[in-house]
Image (cartoon, rainbow, N blue to C red):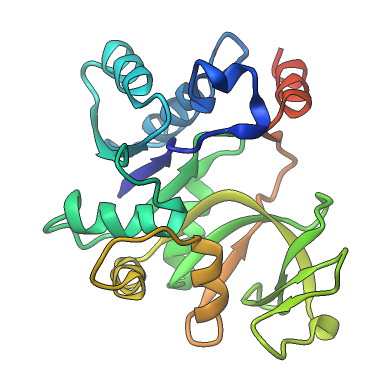
Length: 247
């Protein structure tokens, strides 16, 4: 398996830190968030990683090369155009994964968590899902994915506005869960993401792709069996909460 780390985001909510640094280098428990992701991935036995970069890309590349000199880590350069999560996957599929036909594990660099990856990988392999996404039914969020009793994604709802997707979706018979910023994507789905993007690379969200395709694809939710720590470090308060929890 190959892992992809999304580290290109501008991190506008994490100012003033992101005025001078990429969000991925914000520290939790004495090391940058991206190091938590890399260590977790390498520790699971995955040996090849691709990291996308845009905002202060040089800093991320320098940190990774200095601290992981022996690791097989390459970079997908988005300096010219920030592609969002879906566009980033299309670019990586085209430019970094030639000849590779296995699944990819995707990890947002701004997510710090401590659950083991192996059971999630095993669940993806067992179900044969087109994509397996980390979700938490207990974590509160205004925007929730909606799943059936077999943990298959059927739609999305904004609990504040009542908006739903896909068009005409009714959430009444489904259970909500919050997305956790990690997923495993099959090779066929990754190629479909590339086709969905179109001939020219352009920014689009992987969430939009999932919601447009969830009636055709088997997109499964995965929740770890045991309690785990999970933090999005996207703003100063959330970063402080992660730092306190992992101290």
